[in-house]
Length: 252
Ligand SMILES: C[S@@+](CC[C@H](N)C(=O)[O-])C[C@H]1O[C@@H](n2cnc3c(N)ncnc32)[C@H](O)[C@@H]1O
Image 1 (cartoon, protein in one colour):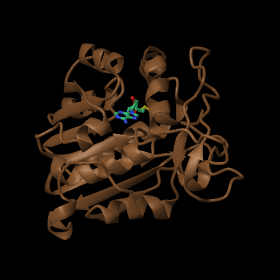
Image 2 (tube, rainbow, N blue to C red):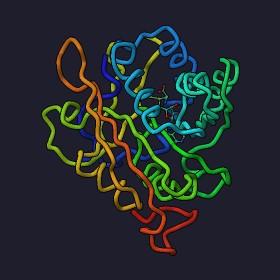
Image 3 (cartoon, rainbow, N blue to C red):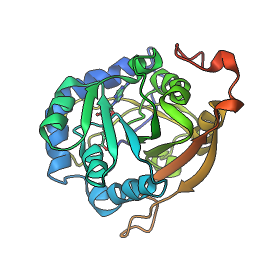
Image 4 (cartoon, helix red, strand yellow):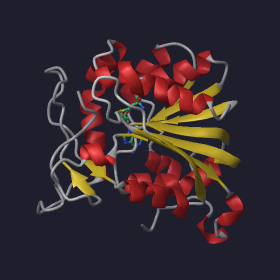
């Protein structure tokens, strides 16, 4: 079961926007919580859940912001390790599930809210586990991150590996059709997602004042291929021009 593969959509008359992604998550909140809690996504149980927990632990953060936390499993796991963790997500139904699930603090906040400066707290580390799916929303989030992290803080992203999710399409950034192949019948109309090449992910970090400290490629034990890619970037606020620090929409 893949997280979200599919064909390209940029050729469509009206390429989808980030709002389509949130509309889909509003519809799938309940089904998603069940899929995660019943371990229906094999690559997560086998590889990627532990990979992201280990990646976070390797930076030894005391405070963590879990961006696009969904039903909150990662927030809970990190809180169980004694960390002070805030999980945020745009979807109120998912945050309700998260709050009912145990440890951790949770708040309904979209990346668009964060880009507008809706959060004043600062964290040692922020993490996005398979949750950076859009285009402008993700660019805006990267622009907001220097204000959300203490100087020297880390931003970790786990996402599908571009080389494996590219399929037969050209290896170029662009909107791709989503797929719920392998998920239960409760999952219908999948949301599109924005494909980024490895080079584009690295540029997204470096353009926003981060230096890449590590890239991990956790291997699937059955296929021997990467089940995901994990980027770990460290912020250096002094490398960001003053007029780029602060809230506001990203121009990219
Ligand atoms: C594939 S789920 C991953 C959830 C969680 N990180 C996990 O590991 O189970 C993607 C999550 O990203 C969230 N998301 C997508 N776009 C968002 C946005 N613009 N602002 C906040 N959350 C967003 C969705 O609501 C959804 O919960």
